[in-house]
Length: 61
Image 1: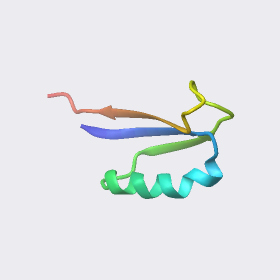
Image 2 (image 1 turned 90 degrees about the vertical axis):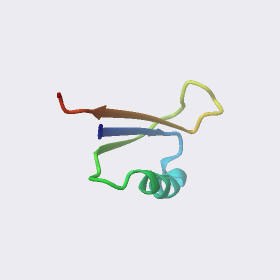
Image 3 (image 1 turned 180 degrees about the vertical axis):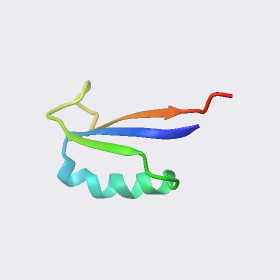
Image 4 (image 1 turned 60 degrees about the vertical axis):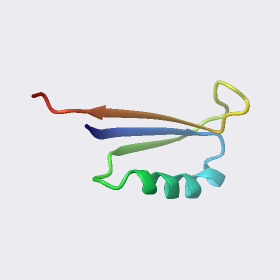
């Protein structure tokens, strides 16, 4: 299975992006998927600061 798209929603992208990128790079080492970074006013719960959506695909047998 290959990760083909990554979307991250950040409440405070200026504060979070450097740390988020370091953590992402630890776990995603293969060819980088398309990555969209969005700054949002809030997420579903006030305690959340980042939301991640990932799409993976596999080749048909």
